[in-house]
Image (tube, rainbow, N blue to C red; front, top):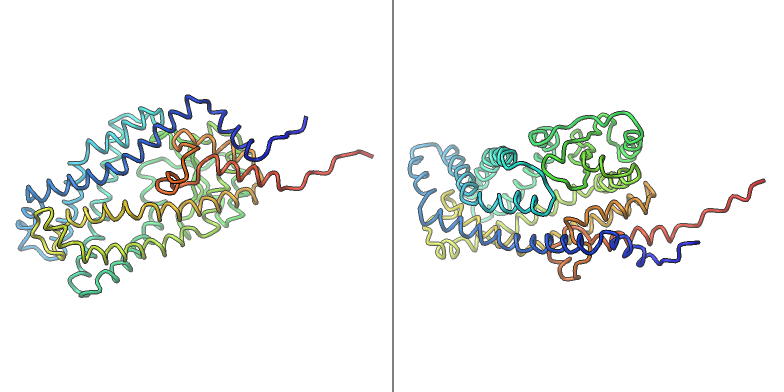
Amino acid sequence: MANTLTPAQEAARLVDTLGPEALAKAQAYTTGNHWVLLGGVGVSLLVAFIMVRLRLLDRIAARLANRGTFASTWIVSAAFFAIAAIISLPWAIYTDWYRQRAYDLSQQPLGDFLGQMAIGETITLVVGGLFLTGVYALIRRTGARWWLWSGGLSAFAIFVMLLAGPTLIEPMFNEYKPVPPGEVRTSLEQIADDVGIPHDRIFMYDGSRQSDRFTANVSGIGPSARIAISDVALKQASIAEVRTVTGHEAGHYKLGHVWRYVVIFPLLAMVFFFLLNRLFAPTARMLGSDARLDEPRGLPVFAVVGSVLGLLVTPLTNTLTRMGETESDRYSLETVGEPDALATALVKTAEYRYPRPSALEEVLFYTHPSVEKRALMAMEWKAAQPAAAPDVGP
């Protein structure tokens, strides 16, 4: 008998296949993430308060008084990242390790988590320290419009990270191997051809090391661009689902979403630095710091302003991201043409992103449209396609 369900009913049916227990678990995890986001601001305030009250950066800066400006600024900036990581370590373990295991989203041992966290923090010390050294140099040399120049520096930093990420940074955390010959690779090569990525940049990686989440991605720009499929996706998904999820990720690349962020995030950085220029002094007084804006020992003040402004701008950045996700879903539907596979693949992501949020919750906290909304779009696209002509034979 022909399927008489409407697209909305079909999307709801797919979500309902998860069962009430799984849906309740996903809702609890997602709601917890919202509180984690808010709690992160509180942790930033606590870290800054401890640093200022104990004068930790002040003492380091005093010892470096006879060093050159570049060296002392970089060392103090790196020390800020290191001290902040140590103070907030219990919070990081709870949010990024314990909660993931508690909700069956990861099997990563604590030792491996801490080892990888140490690698990430080391990269932050070096790269983040250099970036802040550049910002402080601009504050000292460009006068009242330092915030404008710092936005330009942010654009350069983003561009460099996009080039370096896939080839230099990501392999520090996971092992990337070519997808072996077979039906899956052949399907991925077709998608790679559509977006102009060479076949030798199609990889699989051990994403299950950190997470049991179903995922794939297309990362990098220019010569560093590549398609990467998590081993979780390869184990849990059908070939059609792998194709349609990879088609979605390829859509991000083909539609140039990365360039959208290369423009938007530096503009947001300019706004942040502009506001920091005006909010630094009152925030420093509130924390009890006597640091000036051009002194790296004032980084705890910098971080508090950044944490609060970052929370306030989250709905805007989430909206931009959701727009890109919708466009990439549509690209996958139009190029791969597997609406059922896209919908079932999306439902597999509902375990870590509750599929039926309220409209306000989605606007404020969701980086992706709700799973049910995305499945509905796939079913509506399917319903809009012309029916195949019956094969009546000779």
